[in-house]
Amino acid sequence: MYTLPIAPDYYVYGASDLGVQVFLELGFVLTEAVKNLDRDESKASEAGLVLSAERLHLLDADLIVAQSYGDERDDVERRDLFGNIPAAKEGNLLWLPERISDGLAFGTAFSTSAVLDDLVALISKTVE
Image (cartoon, rainbow, N blue to C red; front, side):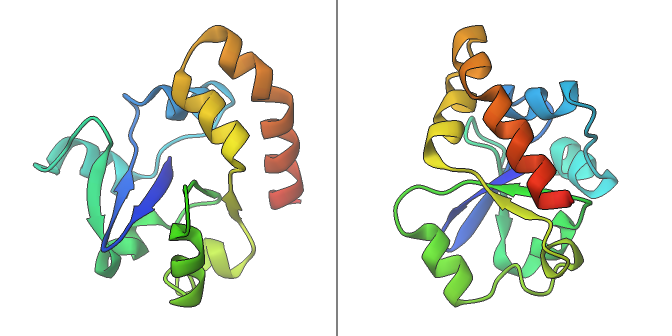
């Protein structure tokens, strides 16, 4: 599961997202909280499920993967929005570089394979 901050809300991607499917194929699983959001959230869109900053605690997992474009990451870090999530406190928050986010977003075999080695290396470095 990974998030995309778009103030004031955040998008959580579930199992139907091609990028998330890469993580599932790597052996990761979605948390029950995210699975429940995937089923219950009525404001689902192609971009993901809307999650307000007040509900970010639902993202706690062994690894949180986040992506941002532009200055959203700076805003999240300045406001310390992930700071109360145990995984983030433990250093298990991975911000994807734009090249890897793009490779996953395109969702093709070629684009995914082009970033897979770098993605696995980043995951390993983050959770070591």
